[in-house]
Image (cartoon, rainbow, N blue to C red; front, side):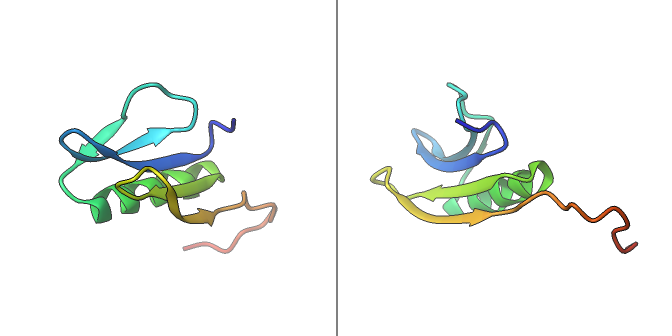
Length: 76
């Protein structure tokens, strides 16, 4: 279990984002696309992975966002 990972999952009311290991949905959305976009942004900020689940609960896609180890990242 890695708390830097986030999942986009089907909910009773649409789609939601959930941090790995959490029992509750953090944020809910009307569409899977909105939930997936939010999940990827959270994973990028945390340096973790984003997981997109289908309606059946199986993982359809995953993206990894490693933490930057650059001591002098470019500005901008």
